Each structure stands twice: as structure tokens, then as C-alpha cells.
Image 1 (cartoon, rainbow, N blue to C red):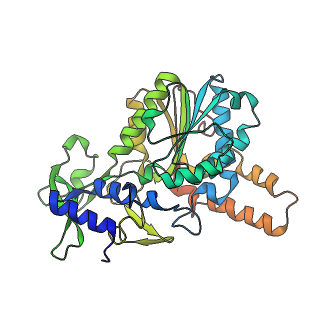
Image 2 (cartoon, helix red, strand yellow):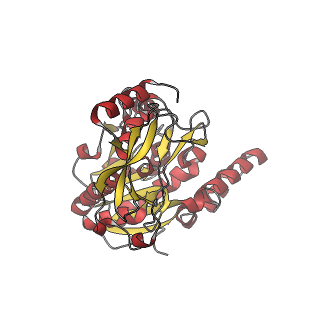
Length: 361
């Protein structure tokens, strides 16, 4: 394993304090102020490590924007309100949202734009992309002002640190930790923290020793905070990510570098780390805070129910054959079952039982 500044830092931590949790390892790899993955580079696009839906086509952001405006109207056009995006990337999604939102002058007049971004490098890119807007940047959700919020988080929860609990031979579920082997290479082991029985899914006693359960405590806490503000002040949240709709046993943690999968210990701070999102756990957290949830449905259902094909036809009308083909390819990537359409899920959180658009089926 080639030495890097972050790897040296991780080794010092472990040698001083002992093995660290997998969640702490992920946090340092992604968010270390000097060497963290999101702190040092823009990871999106062909030149980066992965491509998100807003980068595939403007169609995605336009449909999300139309949903936000429609849901705002459905809730009685509260004014003023906070439009919030978590993890705005290069600003592509929020720019597409605002392009649609500008068709409603009353929406724009009532809106205060807030962006939550932990990376100074990405914030700099966003400020350039969104020059001329009234955007305010935040390092976390805690500083978002009180009031109705209409929030979107696309591919946020998959990047939040998670814990791994592994079933031991004696039936206990022990937390995995990151330590060093005799060659000072990073390695996984079992710690002493035990997951209590009430936190286990119903089938946990039937799986084999060595099985892994992922717990996203940070994501659950964030979902609870978002839902609490929605419950108290009104509004809605739209969570879009890849994941599963029922709690399942199995590990999904992955590392990606230059659009290729790699071992998550190979490039600490130099590869993207993510895991599949447990939408059942997020919905439970929102409900515990008193909000109402809708879905999760597939990204394909969400986009198609809101007019993806019709909007693609409008966008391609009068364009060259090459441009029309590019639009067709983008639609397929966003909605096809073997691409983003089925893997990605969409969860809505509101303060009323009334189902928002796309979630009535």
C-alpha cells in the first residue's frame, strides 16, 4: 500500500488510540480538512470518479424543480420559505431547479436559497456557478433558519459514514473496526461494541456467522432533524439515492476511483466511498419525528410519472439527429431498469398525509 499523507495520519491515529470504527475511517477519508476526498477535488463528471443524475441531463433537475414548485403550491404557497439543497456538487442540479422555478414569480419572491456543503473546494465552484443568486452556504443542517423548508438531497445519504456489525461465531453482532496488521497495512477486525438485539432485523438469528449488517446512524440522525423541521414548520423533502426499501443483511460499502471499483483501503482519501441507502430506516426516522413519508419509489417511476418522456420530446423537437440521440441515451440512463431507473429510489417527506405528485400511485 503506497504511503500518502492521509494514510500516515490514519496509521498514527490507530497506533495512538487503537482501532477506529469503520464510520470514523469513512469520515476521515471523505472529510479530513487537509486530505479528505471531498475537500481536495471536484469528483464529478468524466474527469472525476462518478457521474450523478444532474450531470447526465438537465431533464433530471427540471423535473425535480417542477416537483418542488408543485408541492409548494399543494401546501398553500407558504411565504417566506427556505429552498435547501444538500451536497450541491458543481451546482448543476440547483441551477436546473431554479430555471424551472423562475416560471413562478411568486415562488421566487418567497424563496430563500440555502446550500449545505462541507467542502470549501466545492463551495467555491458552486459560488461561481450560482453567482447572481441570493444563496447562503452552510456547513450543516443545524444552521438552516427556522421556517418551511423544501429540501432536495440527491446522492447525499450514500456518502455518509456507516457502521458494520458482523455476526460472530457465538451469535453476537460485533462492530467491525479498522486496525493495522504486522506490515502496518489497514485491515478490518472485530471490536467489543455489540449491537443490541432490539436493533437487529427479524431474520438476524437465521443468517450465518460472518454476515454483515450496515447501520447508518449519521443518516438516520440527519433524516430525523430534517423531518422535525418539516413537522414543526411545514414543507417537504425529496431524498434521491441508490439503495433498498427494506432492511437487509449484507455489505454494500464500495470505493470508486476513475469510474472503476476498487478496494476501500487502497486509496484512502483518493477514492469515493459510499454504501447503499436503507430507505426503510430513513422513513422510520422521519415518522419518529412526526412527519409523513411517501415511497420509496424507483427513480424511473418518479421521473416517468412526472413527464420525463414528454419533456424529452419537447427538448429534442427540432434538434439534429445527434442531439436527439443524446437525449434518448440520457433518458435511458436515468430511467432504464438496468441503469439508474431501478437502483435509485425516491422518498418524499411532508408534514401532511396528502401524497405529493408521483407518489399517488
